[in-house]
Length: 300
Image (tube, rainbow, N blue to C red; front, side, top):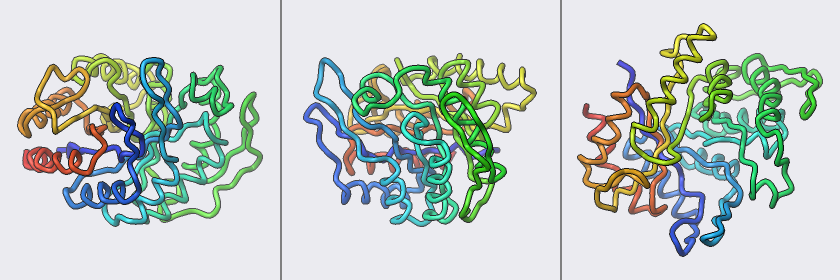
């Protein structure tokens, strides 16, 4: 039976109504403690700046820098990007970044990849705001061959690579696990074609009811292209606040150890192979409060 994995997102974003900033000593402690409690993966978000008309902006530390730092202060836990944005960077450099992070982690890196976000943060940084999925599709034509064969040649409308070679290579050439995020059918198809793990996240509710239709859609796409969906990991991204009482699990999952564990079990029962938790608030205490939940799930 495949192990049901639990990952956590490292707190690299400002949190709470006061927009508290997580500092490196706290982030480092979260990573060390997560490794000690046998969390499976530390995920580092790759975001830039969130703006909302009803609240103060929320800033993020650079995801690539933090992924390297977290990999350097841990030794056994997997470290992944959640997810590297093809909108932010050149695709050949993204592949080089992934190989470098696998070297720093000595073979513990999980390469999470996605199309990135348009809207305000793209506009603020002068990034492309249109045809985001088309740009992503072309980026995959370079990134996937580089990661799986070590070479890429491609001429597109937005991206190109000319006899590009992936050098140097880390401890797992052509074999770094690739996680591809996607919510909509076109993006799910990219995951079905290329990913070792498909990842989706809560948008309106942290209940399994939101996630079951996406899994059914993903399995249908796998059938259409002739891929066994059982060969692809299926990851659900959820918000969890272990310091809050139980509620309806729409904004986040809360409650006792048993209540949180039971909520996460529903995803395993529905066919997901892992849950990746966005922990609120982004404090060491909140992350440490997950330890008995992880222990309970491991004992199943």
